[in-house]
Length: 569
Image (cartoon, rainbow, N blue to C red; front, side, top):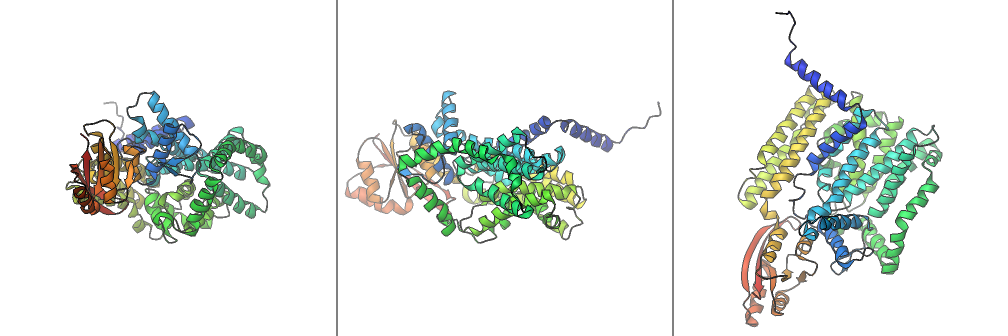
């Protein structure tokens, strides 16, 4: 016996965790590598297997596909309809991604939705890394890491990383711009910004305009206006070298904006500004109306697992609103949030570019020991931490049983683990262990992503209507069948079956489509089937009933029963 006293296991575990943290925090590269790994765990499950999600995603993907089919990289179209709503940036990125996939030999690359999602995945990862960069203007490495990890694990970014749309990439551009603006404001006595900060700022600004027009200008402009009013001066903006930056921005964006004006005779601008942008202000387009307060309520789901901690940090933000770092974060959040709440058209992802600032304020409040169980009603309020995974576990089980007659058995172990970890995060919060609370939430989010996106959606076959219809068309015993649809008109069906999908309006039109001869199939929703059969009887036409597809249309909110009738084989 040497008389030494063995160390308790808990001390050894604490020591190993501390040593690991110390090693990782020695360099930005290591912290960024951990952030990328966490992002991939949260973003990749289900990335290739999730069906095209109607209605926006397949519209973007189909328009990009038609760019490749036509070779026209200026005009944007969905079938024969001009899609003059957003600038061209995301369509170029998606088209390039698919073209690279074709070169690499990906089978059926143009109808592989995952290829169109790659820009969104890269945008989501860039959002996380740029959040880390932006947060370094406010914190040291550990605070910046926790801020970025809140973004990597938040529900709405996990969703947008998997959708072939603009929002993940727009958010990356917005964070780049606001990170540069933060450095200009918080170091305004220095007189000059590093070239890297200027490059990131203006690259994000130009690319943001090319992706979604004026939104990035709104985020930066409103924040700059509020801060200039607070300081009674806008001279600090000169450190961003605005004249040189404006010239760079024009060089990037002007060629396409001129080309589309010439191509469409100005129709792009009348449609994008007059119908799409002003339409969102004046009327709630596409039934996406919601009352003011919508984003405040949906925030508790979209920013999970950090949402309730952010809510507890609100009094901190108000109390310290005159401090420069807090003032900047509030200028980033509040004016644009008010605009979004005021506009009638509302969708949960619109406020995504503001969430990095929410994460910054949350970590500020935690680092100053403001957030904790000592706050009024905090112990009770943090029941929201396990509410989302527990609610999804119950909800997805109910949906699977109701629509498909089975539970999502493959997903349940991951959903249960996520729920248990979230309950543990709640317990850690009650014990005033805030950083472990954050980590338990991060790991819970990773398991939630695997359960929901990796497995649960695979078992919800009743929701994959377009996938199943396209499979029917592909399996016909003839090559390149002509396809039409009656009643079911989702953009995902166009993307999966082909640009020439014929969307007929009536039963007689569907019968006439089959009468044209050759190998043809028409999908007829049940409510149109009587008139379709009556017209076939009148024409003495007997198409073969190939199969029936039953399921639930998320967009219309109703069950559907679709028959596939085929001729010519």
